[in-house]
Length: 532
Image 1: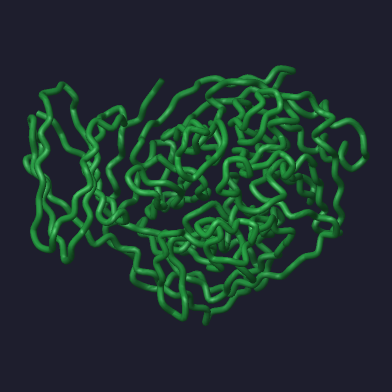
Image 2: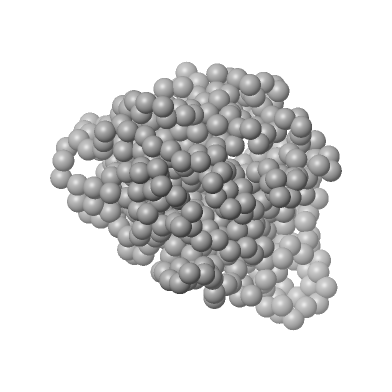
């Protein structure tokens, strides 16, 4: 399998944007009533002819801590829903009429999915399998004929003809994302989780992060679904991501791409990643010079590009985050609570990233595992990013926030009170209104740490030097050209001042290694080191 080497972080990311961006809009949320729409989260969706298709996910709240109570089969969403948001009509059909392989996968949670024209592709997902008599991550790729299935649900006829499915372990992924670049599918991050969840890591489950971007083509033309040209990018340091947001992007050179936003969990700490990873057809770039604080978990999100200013705006709605604002103060809570925050990350024409807190908030502690369904009547790029300055109205709807998990407590999981959470039946219309006076609060996302490495190139040993302004926890990782971790430096605490550590390796024909130093489980600094 092809493996793409680590890309050096662009120089532009070392300096963050200081001035206000051209995002001169006020955001508002308007509740929309859809009678009989159930609370739903972690589901799959597609759109056609102004209607929504919703499949899978869960009808309970956050999963319980106890293995015997976590992800109960009774709370699986076993219905396929069609929603006409314009008329607030809803239709449904049960997946239980489908063959076992389909009906089991299609009631799972955190499936990876992407819409390509009138076809919806679904990969993986986690839930209880009657066939396996256990909770599993489903090793399936499924295609859905969107208009055909919608018509069948609305008319009450058989839904079976509108699905195709194949099985392969490459597709046993949950909590990642499926998207496309240049005609190829990208299955980004996620993990394989088989068995019953428990928070104490007792042996009730087997979990394996993919640490990969899996790339392939899909042939849906005949009666049998197939895939080809499979290859991977492997990076166990920077791609160890699940339950994150993958946001489509337009980069400053006009190239379409993707951005991994935050996600969980770091390899040496039970905490979210804070820095993003940029993905283009050339490979992936960890942007460790910038930290995103206000959105760390999968939530509703939207992407808008202003071609005139060459600025890419990514909006994040509520969810779960390690940081939030309270009375104007940024609070760090390592229990990673539910939050109300609505935030924006903007990339300017030089590729510099900046985070902003919007003055508006979610109505309650909600947004986690919700989905954003775009208003496709707006001008947009093929990858779904809205063409912001091609929209001529002063006030316009960019889409809807649908479902999610809502909570009456900041930290229901850590206090063993997940019954305080529930699946959200809310739908919110998201509107932007032109406002030249609009200002959003700037968040300082700069990485204050730097390292020097000598000698570089090195033969068998090198020294890493850095300055600390306070006592700091230090971890470091070393990966080879294939992405494999060859050394995991033990955690240590170093005092303020000039500090260093030495690394010694055996002689090797490898051309380079990649060093990543982690400061206080918060700031990553990565360097590519050449070998003599």
